[in-house]
Amino acid sequence: MKRLALVSLLVLTLGTFAPLAAQSSSCQVGVAAAAVGFWTWAPESKIKVYIVASDFEPNEPEFLLAPLSAWNAVSQLTGSNVKFEYQGITDRPLYCENCLTIFRGEVFDKSKRHLTELRTYSAARNRIMTWAHIVIDPRLTNSKTLTNALVHELGHSFGLLDCYSCKQNTTVMIQFKSVNTPNDMDRPSACDVAQVKVVYQSVMVQLKRSPHPQPLVVDEGEEPVDDDTPVVIRKP
Image (cartoon, rainbow, N blue to C red; front, side, top):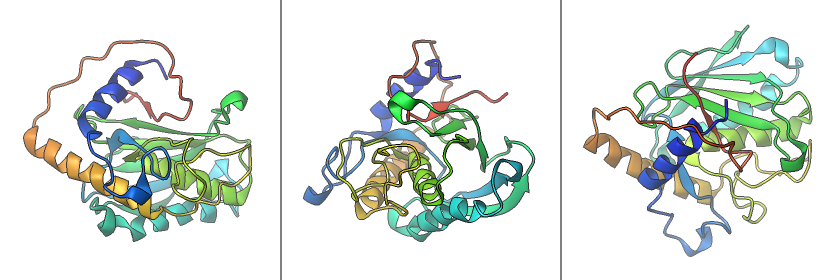
């Protein structure tokens, strides 16, 4: 699933959406702000969110839903105007337009402290996400870490990349120190807002220039080096 059909797409995305950065000395990329470049939800979209209830304990959904509200709260500030709308439970991952399904799956990598994964698909091959899945490893059980991890993965869906060199409390894209250890980032920071705003300025320009984008030619390659890079997959 992670074969780099994926890296080819990600490199193309970086070339398209990442020429800019937040113009603030306090939001230096790699220090206090994440670089940008991944795929995004369409501007102004309403994302229907579902949880595979059988994968979680009865008290866990509230910790999964809090990050939705946190990102909704900055929707206008980021310029995305994307809103998440919780629809309820499902018995399986969904592939509908503007759908996000949260469920558990084996994605753990001890050497890389990898416990969650964003998987997504673009029907138009234009780096605008059609649907997405957030997969949470069963080993992740700490309630606060669940929230931190969901905020992080949603950050990927707004074009933010991992920032393992960033200082604590500067961005939701920082690395987790260990399994079930919270990173204390339960909502987007000011630098996250600034970076997502840059992303969507570029997205809007790109969409205006390419209303009918050509399909991408994808070559297979090696496994990604960065374990937390969102995974782009074809629709089953």
